[in-house]
Length: 229
Ligand SMILES: *Cc1c(COP(=O)(O)O)cnc(C)c1O
Image 1 (cartoon, protein in one colour):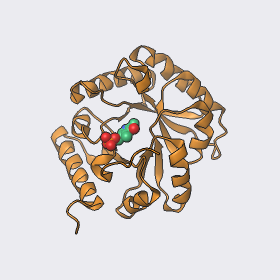
Image 2: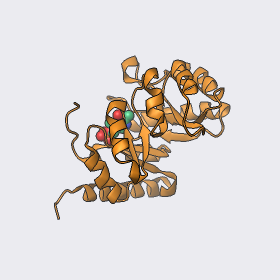
Image 3: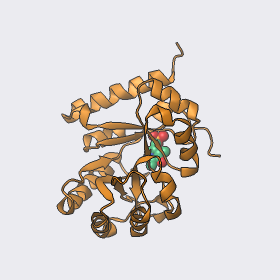
Image 4: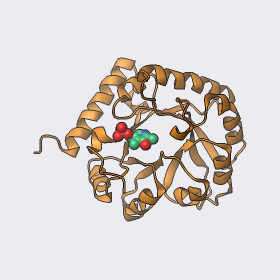
């Protein structure tokens, strides 16, 4: 067996998730690992599916749509985690099980306007920007409540909770604690929106300790990403 195969990396991340959950006094049943497969070919997603992975994440519709179409028979859940232009919403909703990067009212309006084929509500996370750089994506903490309220007024959206990326230059656990505190504000408006999508390859242990329910792990499982095309 190759010393560092996909199966090995998946196993070691699963073991590390279980160990962090134990340390946090949490059940692994409450923690969903989404494998971020961006830039990788459909064949890697197929290999992951053979290893039992059901949840994968992508950040660009132009890459995700053909992969989801090619692998439609595998019954995977595709999570959309990238910045999303309003004119791509309809395309993304054709395959995505949720949109984790809702960051502005105009995007909520675009989701509302999109004719979702199944008619069931779209699962959505509001992305919180933990930096002062708008290019990083996400709503600022100051604008969070207004975005939550607008999302709650959209019957075609089911708000699940918050998503965030820990900024460079801040201790990840402190950053994730800020997300947990913001989540308390969200839950005063939307008691059911308790999910926390946070934790990537470098910091998922800290995220679990701060209550993450959804991890988005790429390179620790997939290995190095090919360059973006
Ligand atoms: C790429 C990406 C990840 C995964 O990053 P890794 O460091 O490879 O684990 C998680 N979340 C988002 C939003 C991403 O774009």
